[in-house]
Image (cartoon, rainbow, N blue to C red; front, top):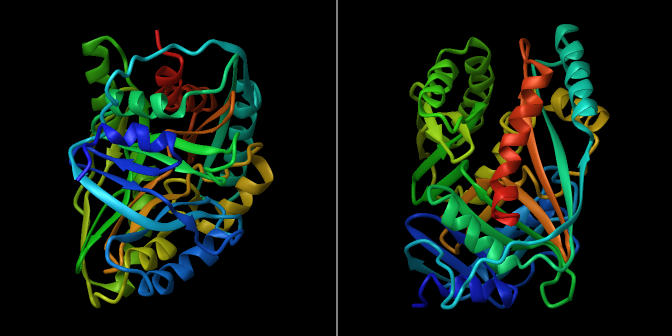
Length: 377
């Protein structure tokens, strides 16, 4: 069983890697699942593909926010080892030199988009919409993906660090999805399912007293608790057809290095263990945590107002084995990397009472997760 440190070397060889505080999964030598197929097609093909594979083979990778877009799921052998991803021997972080930085849209244009969504909410068209924006960084040399992944793991030990080749990893200049997601979409082990949706956020402060004040204010915020409730209610409703019990307690605080979140730990028991993790992903995605509510109206508003191509950002990222067990996170706190180009994305949930300038600050705080790992001092 390889040491987690070997994962950084595996990334260099084009492997898909998922790592959290307890274990690291490395999938090597994968082949595409439904080459060129949409995320929806790849999800539908997962169970059938694994039926024909020996033990130890998993489907792993990412499906996009828009399931009609191309997916990045692959089939291949995987090894899980205890403990989080660690840098390979001799690893020394080297700061990247950024030649150009460009927000898209600009903070002012993003605030204007938030106001447009608020007008739609006031008109009764939709109740919540999650809007994303991006920061594009051009470095003088190619971004070192293995070192970036190791830095993300070191800085975010409670998150799931991920590295997924979006394009063929054997081809030079291919795109990668890298990140440190704090949001568990679902974990399925036999009949047991665990989910931890996040919604309702506030940037953290370096001053301890102010940081605690912000956390307390988040817990007491009517606006943020309404935003969170949309997500929890939708997740519970999506689970009910598959589960004999669903338990969703009151939300609690979850801290990342840059943001406080409202989080709810949802547990459920399946009616039938023939229901796989991928079946649940297909039923849940996209949750109101990354899309909005009602789902159809929110997605339509995103298409009309948002100015970025999300790709696999805000998609479902994870793996499933031949028993139907698997673990999937929401593809947030992520960036798309290709050669010397990096596109960091961040989003915020807009509901009645949202403040456009506050949403600009929230998205900036979320993008700092990758930004500070990439351009470290």
